[in-house]
Image 1 (cartoon, helix red, strand yellow):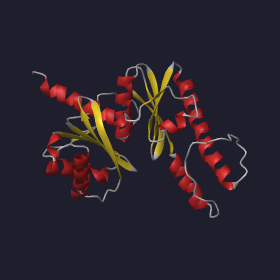
Image 2 (cartoon, rainbow, N blue to C red; image 1 turned 30 degrees about the horizontal axis):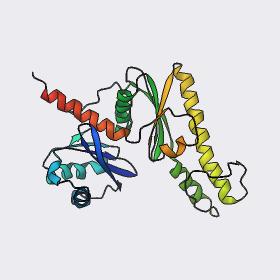
Image 3 (cartoon, rainbow, N blue to C red; image 1 turned 90 degrees about the vertical axis):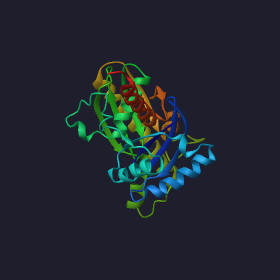
Image 4 (cartoon, rainbow, N blue to C red; image 1 turned 45 degrees about the horizontal axis):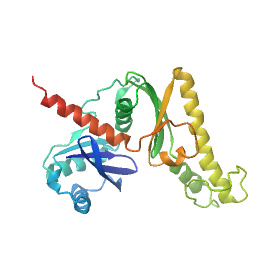
Length: 265
């Protein structure tokens, strides 16, 4: 069974994948100081709770945008699972798609993995919107090539900046508006909620519209990330929700490497 690890700026997602299907997934806050031993204790308990033996894991693949976290994840794979971790984007698991940007080395692993999975799942030109620490908008053409995109502050990051910079503003939750959908707030909390939530929806719709205009061909919009489902309830801009897109990209990348090793010379 494959242990796929997506190490993001805010969270690390670990998923067990078997036959291309995600069996289960777990999430832990990203901390580059966390040791391989700490990861192992956490994972051992979760594996046991789900009824899996540690020995069931016979392969590990890691995609990360946090370089400082990589070493301990590699030690986790070798010390506790007895395998050498495959690192997405590094030999022997180079990207199977064209990164058609000025400096391909700057493309985050999560964005390349999203492009791989989205192209495999949805034909044609695509825009992938990923709600993470940052919200990213990526253009993938009909051939699967990554063409570039947009990086915007994530909604929680925007809210943190607003609250930290304005002494009298309270912290509010990012949640789905209920009942009154007025955009004229009657309290400070309402006004903040309207500005943060509906402002973010307007940004998403506006940027996707501009990308579609620039691409100039029919485009399917795919969203992923923890807040994808929340925003999907309040906009018609998304054509598909793929909550596990990055993990799916890791699984597809692993299968590609496995198939190439199994092929006769």
